[in-house]
Length: 162
Image (tube, rainbow, N blue to C red; front, side, top):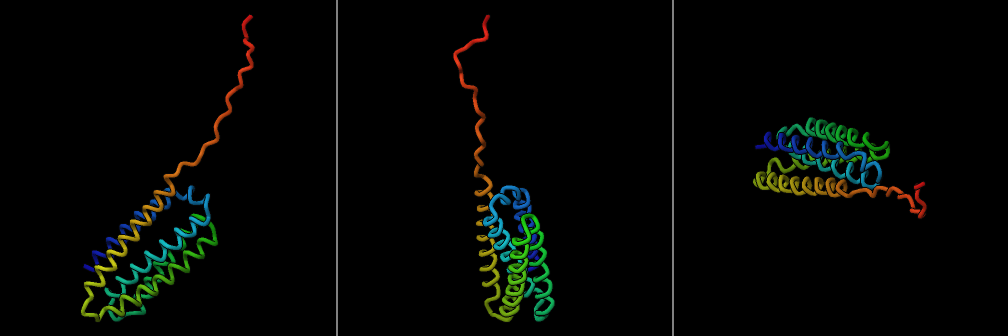
């Protein structure tokens, strides 16, 4: 079940990253939107990846933290590079934070008698946040930018008839 969750998270993450990459030019026009998207996506993906990795690797907290943090750095850097250095730094830091928190949480709940419950809770939370992220990306990019209207020649009343 956990390996399937990791695969699903990875595939859905690739889909979200592809959607953001496809619409990167529209996000570049608004640095605040780019910043929020990169920050939230890198935090969310690294948190859930780290959570599941913390459970899968069991008591090897150090390895889970290293892998999840590296994953968060990669997500934050790759997404942030699409925009600007400030966004890249912010996404990288959020990815590090999410990876560490996820690995720690996954390792802490490993011994719980309600492990399946917390995994299902995190799955539902991940799907809700992923849907909100997709919705935000597509709502933002669906807004049509107003094209300047071409000026029409003003009729002067004169004709070119001879």
